[in-house]
Length: 258
Ligand code: MF3
Ligand code: CO
Ligand code: CO
Image (cartoon, rainbow, N blue to C red; front, side, top):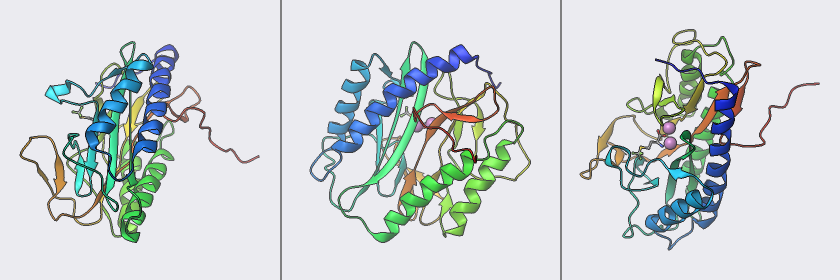
């Protein structure tokens, strides 16, 4: 069931989004060769709690940490470890969810460690572009198939593939709510977007094929062919005006032609 949020409820998610944005900015600044993914996890948890929030991933279905730290061929859900030291040339996705007064915000980004290959640069750029192509479709009256289709077309145009086994999602009191937001689809199909819907759009894109496998720890999800993967996510609300507000990107506004 898709739950529609009131403007007051969306305002609470906006506050959670502000904390998350601050935390992810600080984590991004801490990423460099020599740092471990456990260091990033500790930093994120400290900052979330300092901001008055709660790290929602910690304990979620038994997940042990406050961020997911997914390196190179790991698509999502990489568990931070003090044994994994970041090296020049790695790409890392940090995916974090935080709640404030019971309302969630969820966002992820992928970044290079030091100098990375041109292909990795392109994959990260195109994944972010996929998000923007998707969100442009997030106006009231459009359908989720329009969102997935826009993401898929852009990824394929660059020879990349959207992951099919994991999706974006509704979000609110829970980290994961209905509906599933696929990163592929048919234009004109699926649920219609309407004011009060809050969703996380999160293209997960690989430079090879979309087939995945699960690590022995039961969490890490990798590409089967070992190709690089990138991920970019924000939480958004469809506001009363029918336009999307990016709750995890405070201050962002759409440029409207004069
Ligand atoms: N933040 C992730 C998402 O985008 C979910 C994290 S799963 C967890 O949906 F187990 F790490 F919490
Ligand atoms: Co996330
Ligand atoms: Co999410």
